[in-house]
Amino acid sequence: MELDTIICNCRGVTAGMIKEAVEDGAKTLEEVQEKTGAGTVCGGCLSEVERLVEEFVAEGTNN
Ligand code: FES
Image 1 (cartoon, protein in one colour):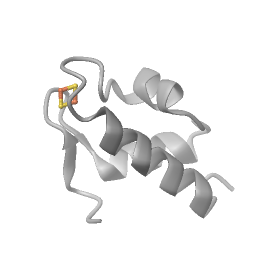
Image 2 (cartoon, helix red, strand yellow):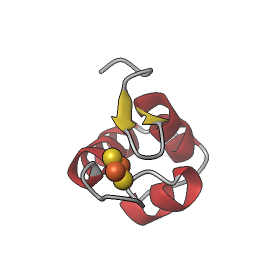
Image 3 (cartoon, helix red, strand yellow):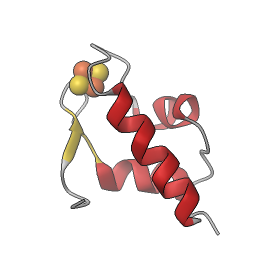
Image 4 (cartoon, helix red, strand yellow):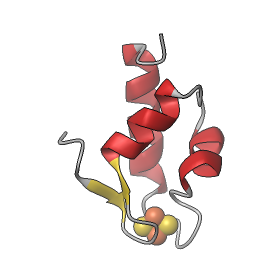
């Protein structure tokens, strides 16, 4: 996964922005949505956003 890959086209949110949100303390899909706006328009990216949140949280990037 390239960090500059756009995950949410509606809001222009990249994988890197999701990672930053997790590093900033977000641990759930909802918290990442609040921080980035990802998945708050059409919802088409939600499963991918959720997958990445889980992946970044599991990596422990917010240490
Ligand atoms: S692509 Fe993310 S809300 Fe539409």
